[in-house]
Length: 250
Image 1 (cartoon, rainbow, N blue to C red):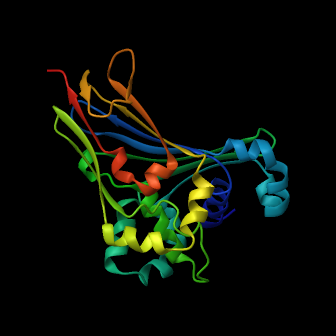
Image 2: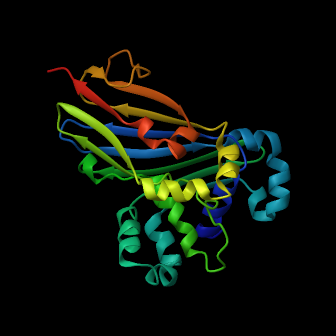
C-alpha cells in the first residue's frame, strides 16, 4: 500500500469513531528529547473491522505494521508540494523527519498510529495535527483527504518553551480564522464526529515538579511526569484551554 494511500485510509478510520490522542513529550537534562502523538482508534476496529476491510479492498484486510518518515511521503507528493506557497513548504519541511508507525489488524481489533521525532530544543516543536490538516492541499481532486476537511486545524499557533526552571505550553488563537470557522456549515459535523474522542497530554521531565497551573494535572509517583486529559473538542474549539505552566523544584 503506497504511503499516501495508507495515511489516507488510516485517518479515515480515525474520523469515523472515537479515538484517543496522546501527546507525549520526554525532556532530557540538556533540553533535548522526544515528541510523539499517539492515536488509538481500536474501538472502531473492534466494532466494524471486518466491514471496513471489505469496503476498503483487499489491502486493507491484511494486517499492517508499517514505518516510514514524512520525507518519504513528501517524495511521493513532491510535484504537488512544489506548487504550494513557500510558507506552506516551510511548514512541511519542519516535519519531514517525523516517523510514522502504523499497526492495523481487523482480526486483532487493533488500530494504532504514532507520529514521533527527536528534538534538540522544545522550541522547535509545533502542532503536528494542525500541520497534518494541510495535507488536503496535496489532493489534486480537491477532496477532503486524507484527514477530513479540517481535521486537526484548530486555528491557533502552538509553542513550547523550557529553560530548566519552567515549562510552558501555549496556544494563541487566530480570532479571524476562528470566526470564519464558526460560519462553516461543516463545523457541527466535525464536532459530532469528535465529541467522544479524547486528547491527553503526558509530559515527562528530568526534574521533580513543584507545581502546575492546571488543577486537573495528575502526577506520577516520582512527580516527574504529569498527565492531563481533555475532550478532543477542547483541542479543536478551545485550544487555549490546553495552555499551562510547569514549575520545577530547585
